[in-house]
Picture 1 (cartoon, rainbow, N blue to C red):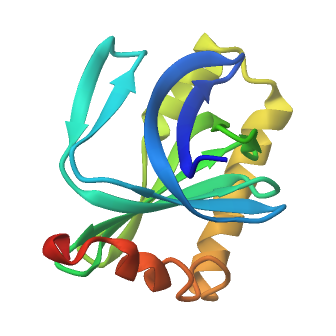
Picture 2: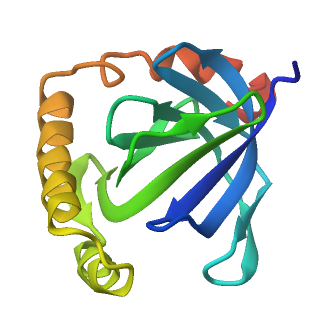
Length: 171
């Protein structure tokens, strides 16, 4: 089996959102951690364009929790965390998919904040999120905040241990 994998973000109702290719670093029954290379192409179906992402990132996708983590790496350290609230990811040997529920929790310049609340409200109507899903997304955001505050997996140093997988000339 190849260690290359395609990551596919979907919108509710399984509408294509965006996708990119990464390298598997670790896979268990409950999660996968991947390394996304500097210069990768992100195919953004919603915006009908392709972006070039100019940073390395270590990304975590849970098969039983309602969030993802993308840690942007610069100068050998985590520069930014970007966490999506989403339905638990699904995996096959060659791809990971997840349904992005728009709410995001990010750490920029050392501060954690919720972003895309407006997008969440718009898409709740556009994609007809059931009330139970809206409440679940909000609850999961609170669970994520607590997990980060408590330094619980994967915010316990797990992601940092993979920084050494980035080629030396990029660290």
